[in-house]
Length: 183
Ligand SMILES: COc1ccccc1NC(=O)N[C@H](C(=O)N(CC(=O)NO)CC1CCCC1)C(C)(C)C
Ligand SMILES: [Zn+2]
Image 1 (cartoon, protein in one colour):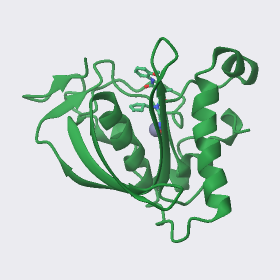
Image 2: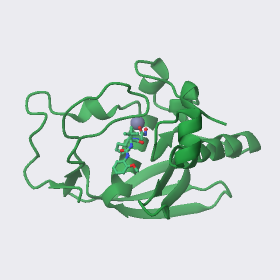
Image 3: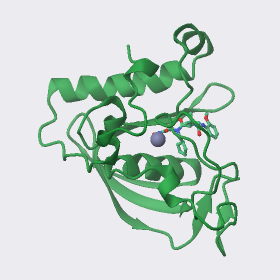
């Protein structure tokens, strides 16, 4: 069972590395990716999160648990506890994206960053990605809204990019022209 002690904190070299492509989807890779998804699911379950002191996460990239592998998990429940997004993606790649940008109005945080860093992180409003799933199938995914933001944040982790790298140093809280806040 993954807990907060398994989550690598900034600054750590692995968080600044470009993660390696997953060449073979073996049993170990599948179980590692499933444990990442399990962490997110557990972290959104009140009793389990409380019991194990888990920070409620919506996405997790393999480097954040010390794995130099290009894979990520996204798991988002809505306030009624219904699953909205549930993905385990291997070798994800952004194939195209909108010109339009969006941002989380309250800024972003990160499971690997303990302090709050203020400022807007601009992301593409819509993205089209391809990835491989744990059963070895190719998947194409068109994402918008929260899912697009989470996917971009996690794919950044696979490229050694932290959310605060994308905050404007001079005008951190200024929305870019034409950018719409995530509703
Ligand atoms: C149900 O939860 C929500 C509902 C509506 C808005 C926001 C959230 N939750 C989050 O943004 N959660 C963040 C998160 O899991 N991550 C994941 C992470 O650090 N991955 O590496 C950071 C988010 C910032 C933008 C996308 C992911 C943390 C760092 C604040 C825990
Ligand atoms: Zn993060």
